[in-house]
Length: 224
Image 1: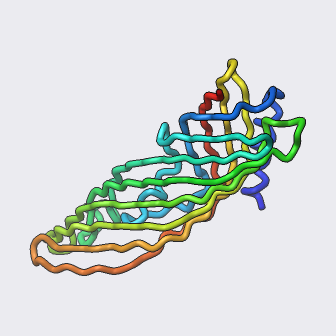
Image 2 (image 1 turned 120 degrees about the vertical axis):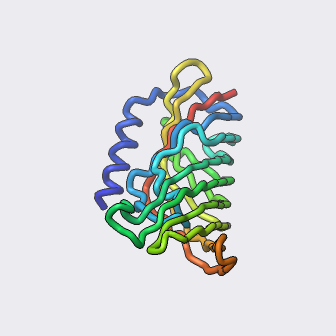
């Protein structure tokens, strides 16, 4: 409840600064400047390292087609991250491992939006479904004997949903700042493979990524 209250209060504060607009333009294109998920569960796990990055900057594009108070919307985002992983400082843990993973997160969104108040065209509700493709590659060394040298690869495909509210704040003529507060839900399987460079052993297992948290993104929009 506290999370919902905080995000709703943030959106209403932004809405109070918005200007009433003329009839909405038919087309809108823009840049996703920042996407921030402050309440996403911190996951210390190479298989889900994207959850450790709560903010992504200039990572995507948005496209919209307005039909009066209704609108169709789509978007795409791509993020990469490199994370250093270690269980504990090796000086205090002889049996721990350390390594580096590089993750890539691609999302393609498609959804709709609706302006519930005709006299407030700057305020709208939306819902997006998105396809997510996540991969990561990592190498880990260490262990009690110091002989561990393991490559770990993760592949994940799934579908999520983002539903929330947005406002359009006109800054200059056809240019807008466009904050959106939404609730993100994602449940996807991960396929994890591990191969040891020294012994040649290989095994594969499955895990799951769970994400359910409020988030905010800010778009820079050009309308025409």
